[in-house]
Image (cartoon, rainbow, N blue to C red):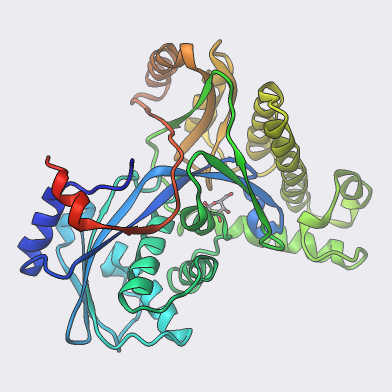
Amino acid sequence: MEGMTIPKSLLNEFITLFGDSSKTRIFFAPGRVNLIGEHTDYNGGHVLPCTLSFGTYVITRKRDDDIVKVYSKNFSELGVIQFNLKQLVYEKEDDWANYPKGVIKTFIDSGYKIENGIDMFFYGEIPNGAGLSSSASIELATAVALNNNYNFKIDMITMVKLSQHAENEFIGVNCGIMDQFASGMGKLGKAILLDCNTLEYEYTDIKLDNASIVIANTNKKRGLADSKYNDRREECNRALNQLKDKLNIKSLGDLTEEEFENNKHLILNEIERSRAKHAVYENVRTVKALKALKENDIKEFGRLMNESHISLRDDYEVTGRELDTLVELAWNHEGTIGARMTGAGFGGCTVNIIKNNMISKFIEDVGGRYKDIIGYEPSFYIASIGDGAREISISKEAQEYEV
Ligand code: GLA
């Protein structure tokens, strides 16, 4: 099954770094692509992501001492980074290693005893900073690795929450729960509708008739921490507080479009009003999009995706030249049913629903035009939707995979 094997060469690299491969256990956590429902999760709204079949692998082995050693093939220039279980503090120079470190600390702070250290060899297939949740996949891979190695028996939703907590408190990015939820709870071939207010969720088949999900990467990198992400959260909070003075609501996700229109004058700052408008309308759109998907109305689904992008561009202002160019080129292409940016924005990827018989033409035309306008090429991936974070049995699968 896809995503269930690791190249044997990875195990060999583990051996080179950490001695031998006895008693190793391997885990996998995927990335995600969000179909619709952007910047709604921390506003108490709905999201509709699906889990990708590619993600992050981690080969692990418990140690006898209290040292943790982590290595990422993607950041090989940083070598093995090591820290003590009693000294789990954010260090800028530890770079990517702060993600597993943060998850370990969050587990310990939540009462899960970790006395023995662990060796961890990471390999990620997701491009970093592309809006496909490479960080959430490192967090969930770490979480399932800790859960199984230390035999904690924690349920997946708790691990999702612990991982989000690590990102909020340790990394300092005030993200919502969507990415960790999708990485942990994904299901083969399904999209997940998640109500971020209640954490109620349902899986739905992705039936796109004769079309596919095509992800297009602007190849413009974005760093969440130094982006305007936390600012957007603040702006929404300020808008919410002004509405709360009069309305009995907990989050912007509690409002209908009509309620918002009747009360928007309470938000005095124009920018905050636009941010709140996006949060309310996008939430409603996401629920409509689920209905369209269930009714097999792909045209309507595509229309809602397009509206979502316009709202993210004009009211939420998280797109930028590269994303807008890639989406507008897609909108003008005969193969496109719907197109929008996906993830936090400010760079990263777009998600497109493309007629199957037009995919190659789409890639050629849109890719070529984008390069003419922006000066470098975008990348394209045809999304295949897989299961959430899990342990991979290495005894059989690693052996049969030769590179
Ligand atoms: C990032 C965050 C998510 C979500 C999206 C925007 O991916 O991690 O929680 O807010 O941005 O929808």
